[in-house]
Image 1 (cartoon, rainbow, N blue to C red):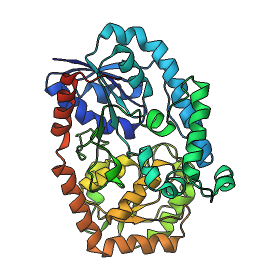
Image 2: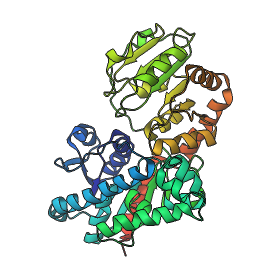
Image 3: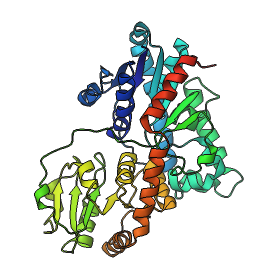
Image 4: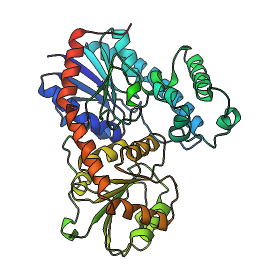
Length: 414
């Protein structure tokens, strides 16, 4: 039996995809100590892992700003947290004497501590994987669709120049690197990916865009849903034989009342039944009258609803897209921030739904797009193909085998 330290991020979209991996590791006899924030204690302990708290040192959130500004702020945030957490937890982790460390790709401190201890380090892409080599292949894609920088003043100043992406990324890397004493770092691969000699990717190569740039250090294991307790206070008895549309835009976005109203106007009083999940950031009273064919709740049992849904209108978070694909439910994706735009593009290119590019669609456009997904069986057929690709990739058992095999080889940082 080996002892494993896992460093996680305090976001549901990052924790949930790791739970199955952790559970499988504990079933194989590995002792797992999982660092995260207190609200995630219960679901982590249910996997068989031992929970350890960051003691308030980590709190991820959203930053509203231009694409390049957000990238710089986020990189600075991760570097600052890395320095703080390594200093605060170094002695504690040393005393644990782990045999290897697994960490979320955003947890650079996991990579730093593995290097200090000279033990194997493994990075987990719990969200949509993005590496610098993808942008090298298609720089315009990264600037326009990931950073959403088409209107960014800094980008516009250099747009049209040769290799503008590389120049901007090198500049950002130097700014952050000099501040933290790491002048040779790559802001994408070293900070946002924390790339290791082994990197687990919870999707299939068939669904991943530009999959050919991911080398053999990246293990694609597909996506497998780990059973979780969901809210049970939902009126399933009200669901009937009408086509079911499920709407959810995540748990932490706010100021979405206008978008919810558009959903009411587009799909209200139609032949469809609609379930809408608001999340905790939306005031129910701000919505106004709810159409008779809508069921609106703060939280809903997403997995159970997806098993019955005919279409899913989503913000494009990784959890939402992967869970929808596992139920073969086609999507209408309205991304709001950063990696959600990449998820939307993956849905579009795989034919598993429609990427609605207007951040503020009209009711007519939303209705037309939703009907297109509902009426064309090809979208669901493509979902079935991607669902099968997840299974064919090997799943959690394959990922765990790779982890244990790698840890035994004791491949450490150079």
